[in-house]
Length: 275
Length: 193
Image (cartoon, rainbow over all chains, first blue to last red):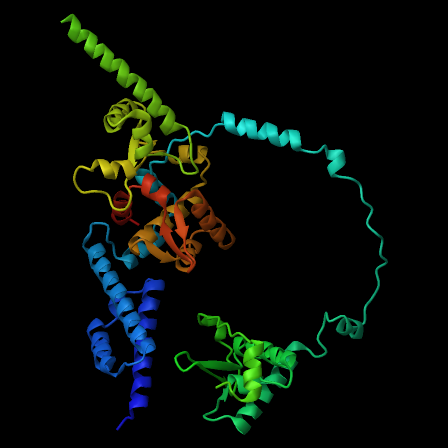
């Protein structure tokens, strides 16, 4: 039998899932009937008696709010389909592909009644223009000749570029791969279920080093070497390395996850207070 | 009899003046968007401005022009209320059709116009909202790849399309004013490919 805590956690996840589905339907104009309203209401009703904390009740209210928006979209969808303006998008798309450019223009011109408008200069804009002209400096004052300092061209060595911080001391991809190997080793050593707490990985002796590690970690995630598992309600973030880098990462819709690396969080982590 | 003639002549002079004033307001661009709001016309012409516009519309018929009313939100089904008219935008549009040659003369290339027609039809079929990516894909079928993005930006700049932060495209104020959307869809569907 499920413990109360596990059941609550499951309930929160279910509500989050409903919210995410509703959001994606709203934002990406998908078919709103993809949302099973009855099923969602049953889930909300099932977990409602469990909620005691204000945060959970807010989550419950937010789910209902998103569901109501989805129902509104379903209503609009039905309304649109019943109007004379409704056309099957696929049918229209096929038709548009098959009609030649000239025919499309001929059709459009039958339905297009462009606005007749005249643009003219007004007394006000003339007055503004005169004011501007009066305050404008003559060209010889604005374009005073300046002779830039002549610098001899020369060659820079790789070491000099590294010293000037234009190049890193390792090729970036090589550095990233080494960092990925390090993550895998750390997960084996200190992690569980093939993942490690985010702060346990990026946390270092100094704050600067921590920021540097967080910076490199962001590239590991972006380039498909690892992924982040986030539990917003528990405020927990885990880092999970992939066995092989994902090469098809660009085909998915990417999401940016900002993670603040604050000095006070780093200090808490050092004292072992950051969970 | 004489008195009646004088009344008619006074009324005629009254409306002639109002029509002139309405022409100035409607033809010359005063704001970023062309056209005048109903409440502005009421302020300038008086509360009987709908009647002035009706008379002006009759005069414009001979010139193949019309006074177009664009309502805020959906078009009212019956006779619009004074409040709906006050909130609406009025402008002068072409009543009939342009020929392809005339369209070229007013600065539209055939390619660009075809692209606009395709974009508008597609967005309409998608309930007035479609992703920019899918519209561009559709346009790439008939327009050179490099031109597609530039054209969509141009349609947005002119006010035919609008784009939100999620790169979703909508029909904007100019399409709602200038394009007979129902006629466009019917014409596309009834054309033999």
